[in-house]
Length: 455
Image 1 (cartoon, one colour):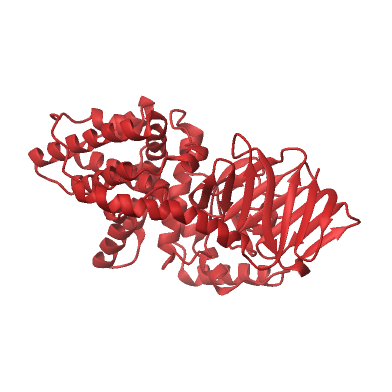
Image 2 (cartoon, one colour):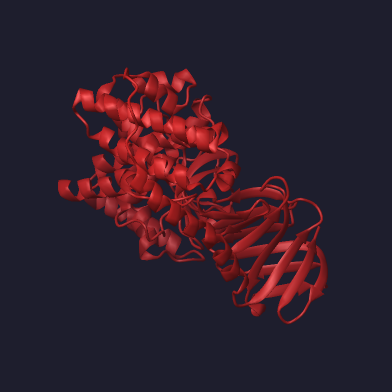
């Protein structure tokens, strides 16, 4: 173990190097930079017990409009400055990354996470989520049977009050199953879950039930690994740890949601619950599951014997869901009206040729109808080398045809002083949340609206 004095001096040396660069570090940058190596060591220690055979990918931690730090990356971009062995620094803007996910950085799939989110009360919560993303890289790289879910299906998922009521009942049963130690009661709960899934399949159809299973299969193991990392390394006392684990990982199962609201997140939790239950009752199931090419729910059900039973009475849930689901459906119209009543110049980008759809955040995209989506956190489009659109944390609408990827036009509202049009043939908009630079032709411009035809 290196002496603490040596570690402090090494860090101060690194801090001095990067403080003399173009952008000095903020205290939050220093905090996470100083913990990145410790995280990687912790992740390496826990990965085999969390999930046998799990590999550890390169990582990138960053702050929006601030620095990005690459660790254990074999091929960092040339613009990134080497700080010490395995550690490089560049900027978030040049990588155009956002959120907690995985990204190709110089041809290498890398786990990424932004540490400026207000959702983290301590670094261990943040690094637990980064460990979640490293598990996704492992899945993508080494587990061919696990396929990413199709975000288009999420946007089209039926908003049906009967399905919502049954789904809430199913979530509560999963929660009870996690902490049930009575064999007879366990079998009853499991049977009721399976019964409800059959009923929901009759309501929403196999396509959307398969979507749920895809999310559970992909996200359940990663979310479970996140919980294990937090439990192992969070410095909080047992009572605080237990409170956070209940709230973050199990609480969603006991919380009523309707329509598409937090839909994907709900299946992170149900998938995690299945992993938790399997770990309690079965040995060596993780390797078997990843080699089975089965969906997690189907694998889970196959591991237990139970008799069919009558599903629980949920007439009260039906009554509540009928009211709440309708409110959610009505809110789509209200949200669209709110979008179109923003301040600023209305900018409409019309695309002659379908742009390359690079990225969006399906958990914060709202389908208003079958041709219009409102995005609130992320949208990234590209048109060759010189045309790009990268928007984070700014409301924007996309109109599309057939599939969400086939964008016909983009609409957003921007302060007039942030819009530049060069010789009527290129539009540029830039602030902390927007980077738009596209060649084309100005079609129309007045005080309140700009229409630009994009090449």
